[in-house]
Length: 235
Image (cartoon, rainbow, N blue to C red; front, side, top):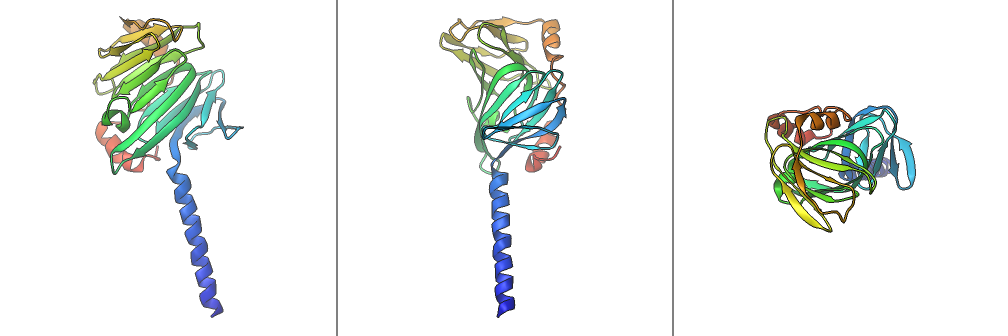
């Protein structure tokens, strides 16, 4: 009788552990696949050093110090790299690969970045958003380079081709209007959220100089990404 109760208790305890592990895993939004220099994450009011391989969660705020950078892989396969003195918050990220449903909201306060959108941006318009101090960016299956800064300083959003040569769309909107970027090299420069949004064409040299402030994204082919999306937490 005691043996039976003991076995039952162990089974119950194991079930609780498995359940808790699954619950925690289900809240994971991203993973740090590369970290250089001093990078911290603020979670529930506590700031701790962030190292390669660590998981990130909804509402996590990631900051890079001088001469630091981070490479992030999000739950849906999106890739985003940040340069030094960057400040990014994973506001919301929900993705169900079985139902092909989800949404992704990010907020970047400062710093240069590169981004390659993943599965969520392909599900529908405005399901992936990036908030900056001067505008909201709706990402529709594409790649970006840009730099965010405080109001009164230059903020850039530039549409670029992904490593396969494809160019998607980006919708940039603030209180004064909205523009759609759909050509390689199109972008906007804003200093204020009330400033009129005007698109312009950027030269390759300018884009390259901006991109140099951020590590190159370690890109995989579409086929590899689709396969590895089943195991997105791997490098």
